[in-house]
Image 1 (tube, rainbow, N blue to C red):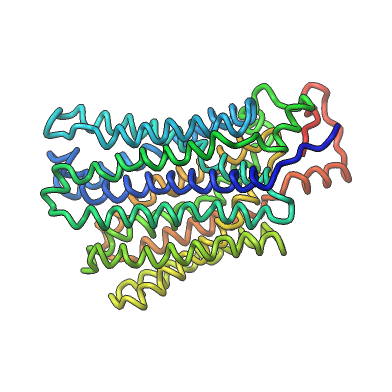
Image 2: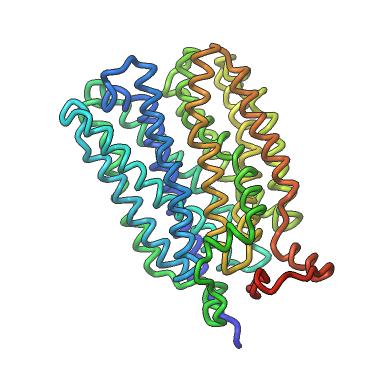
Length: 445
């Protein structure tokens, strides 16, 4: 059978489409995270005291992470069954629709308790769609890239979180120029409605994509599985679990650095605009650093770069918080750069390392499930736990210990991670006879 080829234009569109989709995902998540931390307590939970209202608001932020593993299972199944392109068009459309509807939602003052209920439902739908979006985007870029540039190109796709953060903070800076009364009356809706423009642009690019060569080859060879998501859990359960735990510190660092930092800045009398400016500096750094670490993973060793990032994230909180406490802009900026250096290494290599823990015909399911379970463990509860620890102890030390503990868990889990091709080679060298009832059919790598 002849090899399936892909044009340079298609390859570029695959990277651009995935980059835009990743950017929109993080834009929407960070806009929601920021507004849930700053305003949604008053808009949707006004009958509670301010701290409780903020915690309840952050709980709706966490609901999307609960939906993400479910979405990962569903969209991973279809991504491995019908193809990467069709699944990614669906996730983008549902994601954008849910975000726009949040911007149109009546508040508690208008419809009472129905407002937070509808907010939670839309947030859950948004989370389900996001469960298949970013991992599928990485996969689209990975399977369209030349083998020697996979890390670089998925590293470029990974910068979508920085572009999303940059865009979210830019929009937030514009909105916060309004008075508090204007923001609570109508200004908070604008960032969510703006998502319709972003999704429209992304769909134009995504609809012009071709299917990835590797999936097209697997489909032509009849290797596509009937229940890929189930097969990932049953046949690659250890790899899935360890990949989820290895992703935990990455999610925790990113969401504490980008969302909780606004709350912590307020407690040490650092203005919101100053924290947003620090995050802009961090975004510029990430946009440069992640492709570099992706390139490094191509040149040397993907796993080494991935694990090195976790090690750096384990130690960084003990420098980040003291540097924030100086209230000196250059020193606070240094703190953010130290925090995000490990993240850049880890996330820069993640897009090419995680998918290759699984065979081609199970990659979408394998990466989506492990990535989003890690998001549930790290990103969902991280801001809530950090806010509670700060409220209880009035100190950053317990939060830093919590972040370091997550890093240790990620390091231990990484010990058990090996790319599928390496596991298959080892199995061929040391074959084990399996009962006929449980023997695995051949799959493409």
